[in-house]
Image (cartoon, rainbow, N blue to C red; front, top):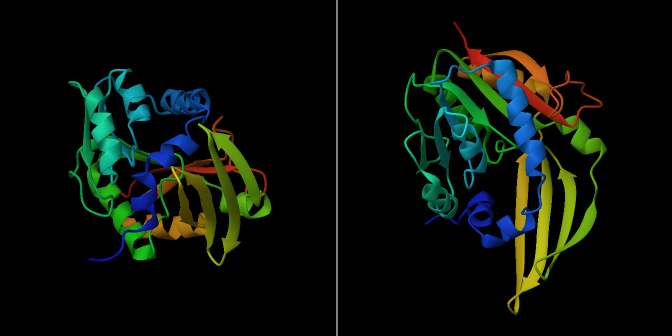
Length: 245
C-alpha cells in the first residue's frame, strides 16, 4: 500500500482543526456573500462545494436556500459534516480527481486554496476536467487560490502559535514550484510533524490548464472584497470560469 499523502494525513488530523480554529470566519462568509451578489444564483440553484472540509461554508450556502452538496477527501471531516445534513444539504467523501455527477451543478466552488496539492499536474487537470463535466451548460466555476507571485514576495518565514496549550512552530519556504509549510509541535508526550505543500500556479498556468480542461476564464478578482486582480499587489487569485461553448 502506498504511503498516505501529506493532505490525507494532515487534513484528517485533529491538530489541523486546532491550528486553524481561529480563522476569521466572518471574512470568509462576507466573501461568499459578495460572490453570491455578483453571481445571483437562482433560488433553486445546485451548488457543489468542492473540498468542503467540515462543511462550514456548505452550511452557509444551504442556509440561503440553495441545493448544496459538499465533498471532501477527509473521512473525518465528512463524518463531522454529516450531522448537519438536511433536505438541501448533503455530504460525501470523494476524491476530486474522480468524476462526481455530470451536467448537474449550476455552480462549483473551490474555496480557500484547496487546489494544487497533488504531486503531478495531470491530477490537477483531471480535477478541472471533472469540474467541466459536472457543470451545466451555463454553469460557473469559482476557484479561490492564493496569488503565487504575492506569496513568493511576502513569505513570512517562521512563526509560533500557542493554541489550546499546544505550541506550534511553523516554517514557510519556497522550493522550486511549490510553497511548503512545516508544522512541528509536541503534545501528549509525542513530537509531531506535518507538512503542507501547494504548487505555485501562476495566472498563465491556470489559463493553460483551464483551457485544456474545457473551461473558459471570464473574470479574475484579487481579494475577498472582489477587487480587480493585480499580479504584484493582490493577495488572492479568484477565477470565474464557464464551460467552453
